[in-house]
Image (cartoon, rainbow, N blue to C red; front, side):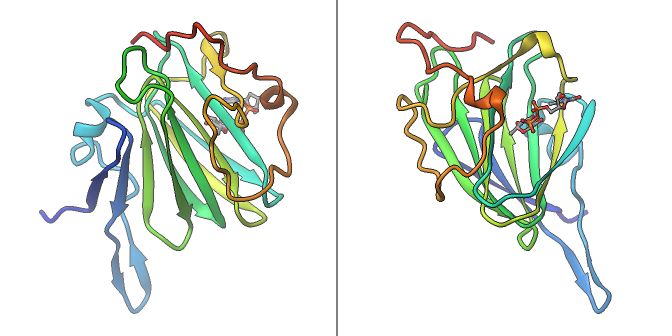
Length: 187
Ligand SMILES: Cc1cn([C@H]2C[C@H](O)[C@@H](COP(=O)(O)OP(=O)(O)O[C@H]3O[C@H](C)C(=O)[C@H](O)[C@H]3O)O2)c(=O)[nH]c1=O
């Protein structure tokens, strides 16, 4: 059976950009959004246990940067279903050679691409157009007690957002700067 995905490694281990390979015909296209078998090498065979969707009205809004601590650490598979975003993953893994490094890439409804955010990495995005929608597949359920976040404008990360930050939830604005002694997330 021919592959329905093409995987592209990034400069950060585990953060992988996955190209979906749609099958087009005169009606439009068919694409596989997820496949346990083909994506097993990226998910470690963990099942998808929760699927979330967000709609963000205003261009320039930032959501994130979020992660969950073990034992509720999760892998996220993020796709854009409408509009366009700059999707960002930050390596918070203790001992990682790319600790506090980040990877950013545009995801849009017009391209067939998904970003894989591994356990121990924080995820966030900025909308590049109004009314952008994201779909998230999670390998762990939402666990508020395990949730944490890093500030999207933290100078220790120096994330280059493409637009001025137009909107931030009070929760996200309240994430503290990364503390000097922060060792990262032990997985
Ligand atoms: C994540 C989550 C949230 N919620 C509730 C908690 C709040 O009452 C409400 C909004 O949550 P929050 O403000 O944390 O959601 P966002 O800031 O949009 O976070 C989202 O965007 C960033 C970029 C992400 O990576 C998160 O995974 C994703 O959920 O949904 C749930 O009920 N279930 C869930 O799985």
